[in-house]
Length: 168
Image (cartoon, rainbow, N blue to C red; front, top):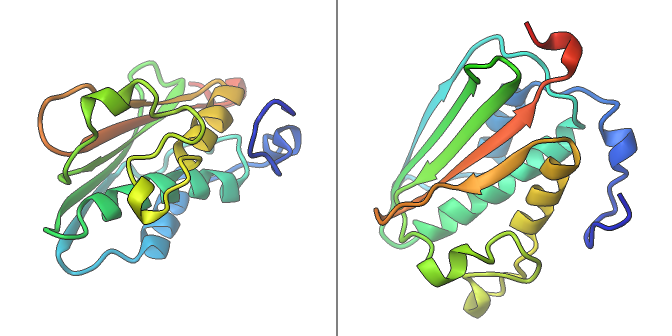
């Protein structure tokens, strides 16, 4: 995967490891350290199957989306929802990370997963976190999308494929 701009990651090695998605989500939540004016609501499906991705990379993907959400709600506070569940086809784990922040401007949504695209240029955002997440997930057959809505906030859906042997 040498085409990844970011990548100190060796994705061939990273996919030889397994990660508990809920553990990675909980670790990312703890690392982001949300302030008291942000209510964090979790609904994590217990006993999810393991994702075939290095736990550090998986946590990093979740951490970056959550950190963006925290920054979007920094002034007024709000609510963060984190949901994990097995897809209806049982071939993927779906993670939803949704915030009640200011949302992402419509003109920014098309380039959201491109390198150096940031809504935070005034605060030093480099615009690489979602690009990295997108590329890592694409490399393993997954994806990250922003749900299209005119409502305030942002709602990201992360699809993590399960290895064929675990699909039941």
